[in-house]
Length: 152
Image (cartoon, rainbow, N blue to C red):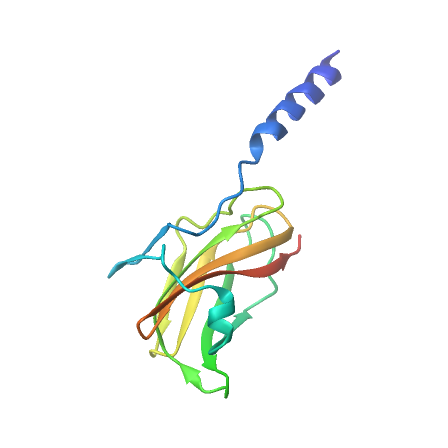
């Protein structure tokens, strides 16, 4: 009887664990120095006509609260020349389960006006995730998802 009750409770909890799919449209990204409204941001398709995004992980992304993930982001034009972005923010999203990760205290640091270091965030489980990027290059705002696979 106790095992059946435990299974029932786990089933109920799992039904409420995942919420509706969220998107980055109409969300606000913030940093210490600026607030940017990304409701009118350009899409990935518009971005790819001019630029490339480069995401380099210090170590392969891993799940769990004991493994702090960290990556470097920079942008180039189609000739592979460095392009400076003035703002970048991101959030974690697991589309399959409809939830985010532990990214509330994430740190995004601009280094030498050339690239960003993103750290202090955690994936709650392994599988397919999205980094939901929001950034500014010149006067253009961009918002799109970048896929990442997270291991245990």
